Image (cartoon, rainbow, N blue to C red; front, side, top):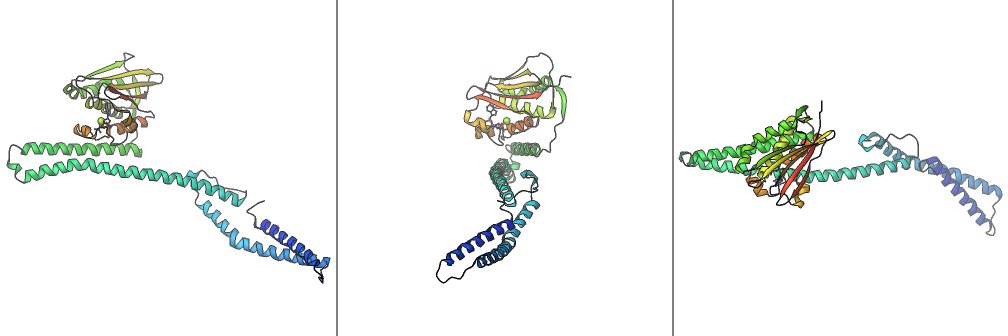
Length: 348
Ligand SMILES: Nc1ncnc2c1ncn2[C@@H]1O[C@H](COP(=O)(O)OP(=O)(O)OP(=O)(O)O)[C@@H](O)[C@H]1O
Ligand SMILES: [Mg+2]
């Protein structure tokens, strides 16, 4: 039965009432003194049928069907493309509306769950940002207050405190720059500028730039290139330099004295496989799933002491993903870590 057709509903209901009337008359017929004839049967049940048909039709049209049509109009007017519901033509109106409302309700529930998760993430993120900025701001305030309270005239601290304040300003700038880079990567504002370059040469340049830091810890850099010749890739050189710098700095920061950092570059068909490994302090397995989240640090105090904000690996992940690749980590607490990713080869 077509549940959305008011005429059909009225017809069936009126017919039912007509039949009930006939049956009622038939019952009355058996009562002594009744005066029913066959004509009475036909006239009365026809009258009941017609009158009830009209009344039911009016009730359904005015009170129910018009409102259902209004709901349908509203659904049609506010159909989101993302819901994937095509404009309807034909079919049973009520069944169609039920189906569409079901699809929309499911989509809205999914969206609300996603928004709730984002809200938690946003709150956590804001908390982290204010916490990270608060430390250097209070430090600067402390140094300035001491200097204003007479420290400026004290040659044993005046220059030292100004230098400390400057280091805190530098830290704040670093945090803001990292946040800016992440925001740009996340909003897609930052378009990759891919070019052909020699990844072996870039690794050498990054090693050179971090040599002093490594020397302080007596860490040795090593490069393993299975091709023994330049390897050209198609990627954003500036961003890949950032990736390599972050990974190499981490390998030194969380490396042990007299340790080593190795980068292995190997051929993987259309891609180049790059692996940065160290024999440092390593990472316990429970930290690995959250390692690439913004501000996540295994040992907060230790990392902050080293000047870390916990944004480095989040930036690395974004850059590698912008290149349509994934970054993987393998680590054993106490014996070292290995970070690996691929880049598209550019052979010509
Ligand atoms: N090679 C590594 N060995 C051991 N732990 C590591 C290594 N690399 C990263 N980690 C851990 O992962 C955390 C997150 O690293 P990430 O580079 O994102 O932040 P960070 O080094 O603390 O700060 P920054 O934003 O300055 O890089 C670090 O705090 C550290 O605990
Ligand atoms: Mg880091």
